[in-house]
Image 1 (tube, rainbow, N blue to C red):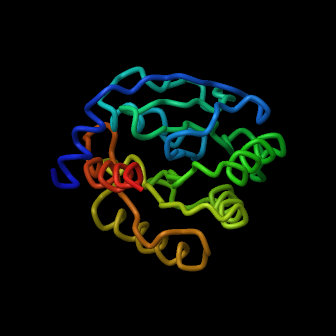
Image 2: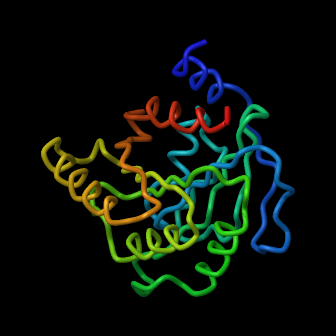
Length: 206
C-alpha cells in the first residue's frame, strides 16, 4: 500500500473521542504517536479536524470562538492520536497570549514524549498575526516540530494566497522548530486535505 492510499484509509476509518481535560495533571497515558492542532479561536480548527476525518461533529464547531477550554483527544484507527488544543487570541481579547492558556499548552507541548507534530493553523485571510508569532516562539522553546497549515484557502484569490504562503514560508525559516513544508487547506471545499493527511499519517509509522 502506498503512502497516499494508507493515509486515505487511515483518515476514512474509525476516529473516536476518548479523553478531554482542562488540567495538565489529568492527561491520558501516552501510547500512540500524537499530532496536535492549534490555532486562533476562529481559525476553523474544528472544521478542519472534521473535514480530515470525514465527519461533521467529531470536533465541536462552536458558534462562539474561544469557547473550547479543554484539550481533546481522538483515537484515529488505533494508529494515531489527534489532539485538539484550545484556541488562542480571540479578537475580543488582548494581543498577548492569555497566561492560563500559555501555561497549559506549554506544559503539554514540553512534557509529551509521544507528540510527533503540531499543525499550527493560520487563517489565510489574515496571514500571520502577533499571537501566531508568539505561539511559534512557544513551539520553538518547547522544541516541538510544527507545520503551518493555512485554513479557509478557498476564500482567497490565488495571487493573494500565494503572497501569504511566501510570507509564511519566510517567517518559518526564522524559527528553529518550524518545518519548511506548509499546507493550504479548505475544510469547506476539501482543498489540500490529501497532502495534509499523508503528512500526518506518515507519523503513525515511526
